[in-house]
Length: 375
Image (cartoon, rainbow, N blue to C red; front, side, top):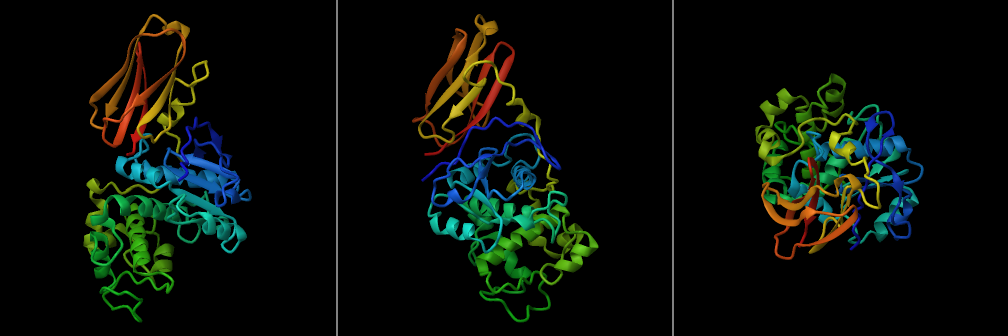
């Protein structure tokens, strides 16, 4: 299985919105599936966006920004749920962007993808509008990226909440209420008491559940509350405002708004440029940045690379591993180092899978990077 994790040093690319990600050439141009793409962005070390050459940089950066905002909804530079982060990485989650729905590229991609990536949804060129993030009928980016995060993240990590089979989760129990019954095929008509009445015959029960989760999340975000949108989606989804959602779909309102479930609450606006993203752009002279890790995720050994400047040669340096609870679990360096580039291998054979932090302290300067151990 191919790992699509690259250490990126983001630089500022200004499109319509403020987005701090770097579009790169496709790192796997000869792969039988991914070879159909020419452009690539890795978002926060988790989701790989691949796009055909005809997709504008502005649209690709919009997809990247929305992806980052949904993963890091408080925009503090860290993905909100480490377990979702781990799942997305482990499954090699991919967000493909195609020019046409019926083009050769999409057929070639899915014919050759095999187990090389998790794709919860796809996007097409004419579905992306950076000027109207998530607006129904204009920009499908929020919907399709959310489908991808849910399918490759939430459904996998929290099956009791989000599993898609009948009678398998709080999600499907709530959907059966919202549809007026448990229907394996689309009823004609839906019961009068139903407020969710999706009628796409190509969408099976699991697909219906995924669409239902999307409607609930974006309703809570306030994306659907304008009169034009409410009227346009009424044949499928009725409680379009937060007030209607809270009073009509009590089960899902409680699930979506429960902070312990860590679903995104704020609507993406297409801007993502956190202070944490920017800090990595400052490189100390030398072959390595101040602190870099590879591979990441890893099992069981990762290489830690860092640079000590001439001005810090007589200053104590600490290189430590910190767990998700903030406890120091191992100290790799504790002393004064000679100037130059340094490389240390961390063997985590005795540590459980999970999220850790590698922290370098040199005098009063601190640099921390997240690392994920997958066993």
